[in-house]
Length: 605
Ligand SMILES: Nc1ncnc2c1ncn2[C@@H]1O[C@H](COP(=O)(O)OP(=O)(O)O)[C@@H](O)[C@H]1O
Ligand SMILES: [Mg+2]
Image (cartoon, rainbow, N blue to C red; front, side):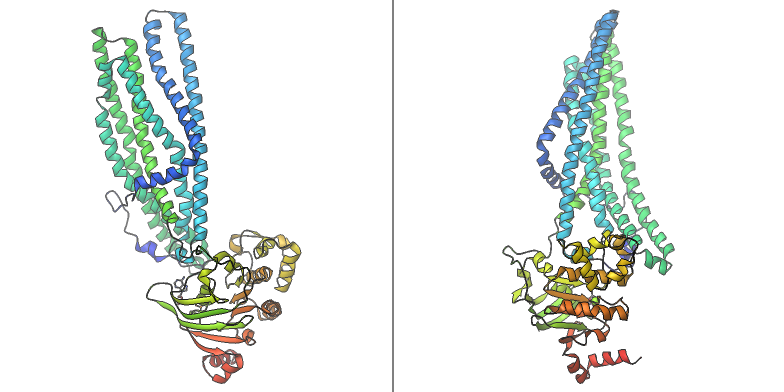
């Protein structure tokens, strides 16, 4: 289904509240721990890889802890006694320790990227599958770009967090506790001195993180909005150019762009405090260690080697804490993204199969609307009290002014939307009892606006029935009078379509859609202004194909050129959501009602 090019959605502008700086309105994570649990449910399946990764983390952390200890030993046991060969030997050992640490750190990163990418692939797939189950009403109320942003940006930021932060948070915690143990076993007085600045560091980190968290959520949201806007600006380019609205679009874009800058700036500024502030505190800690260590060495309660080891340890101690805060930031932005993803996942599809849904293998084509009311939005009825009974094989035409509800009628029959009141039955069964996929397979539709997928013309026609051979596709194209123009395209049936088929004329696209429907060979056929963009000659030509197609099948044809529907078995005149007249062409002409008026006006020119 393609959507008509829409004007830039006004709500983007309505939501503009000027640049949002610090202290502006922000959104908070709705359910932080719940979201993490859900992410875990996705990661669970990678448990063994995760375990291996944790093992590697353990090894690299232990090796990392050994290095400073070795440095202290080298200073005290070899360098101060001036033992050159011993020093060299010990240095070689130190080199091996550092090298192995590097290898295991890389391995651990590699494993984690693997785990993360697999988790993300599953999540992305689920999100995409979910999009396929959601009904049109869901898409009616959201911008495409924002939804796309959830599949791309939001999932991406989760990927970053999973591949880097999860395991690093773990390794940081491990490193911090390991270093603490090592320090206490080396010299408990110096260890206490080193730990003195920790509470200060933690409280500042906590403050900054809570403050920045809400800005990360705003940033993800504003990014989605920006994408939505760009998507509309690109798909609506024609209309924008046509009405010379480029400047206005630019102005609107700069508002959305500025808002994203604002929230991204706020998020990054606040979280950017972390590094420098913590580094400064770390340096104060270092100073304390050296000062106290020096006094203790003079008193003989410590050695130069121990001070050297502590200097390295304290770096190792504060680096993870520092990292931890960065990682938590990354994590926050990921959680914000994940929430947006799960929000879509939690949408209950409005239209779902019942547990014991009937599979529609083939339909006779008996269609009955009884007491059907329908509204897209509550309180705004579009169809009112529709009662029609169509017998198998009957050719029905729907006519009426634009906006009277003809397409809506078709939408109900296809179950794009469910009725608000009443029932729609096919072959005596409520269509809500059928399995949706099987039902739609039996109904062929040609709409006014045809969407073609990227791919060749051959593939696009074959979309009607995937197992059709090339010969069948060409036969269908001939019947739809599409063969002529396809033949003259540079690559014939292998011509590739771009962005929805805009490299063909709208009439040509309609011909392809008709070929698609012919190929699909459905039991019920719907043509909603399917020939509105086709010239009269070609239309007459396709009429032959169409009448062969509708032969013996229930069909619904909506057309404005009343000439083309004269032969219908019954014509329904729809006016403001009600069927005001029905009967054959002759009946309606005799009636001298709305139809007769419409018919005459078309021939008075
Ligand atoms: N997705 C939608 N959401 C809300 N209103 C809609 C939607 N589609 C159509 N409408 C409204 O329903 C009415 C009937 O539209 P439609 O059935 O497309 O008319 P027709 O096909 O006869 O020209 C119109 O007033 C239109 O504004
Ligand atoms: Mg319509």
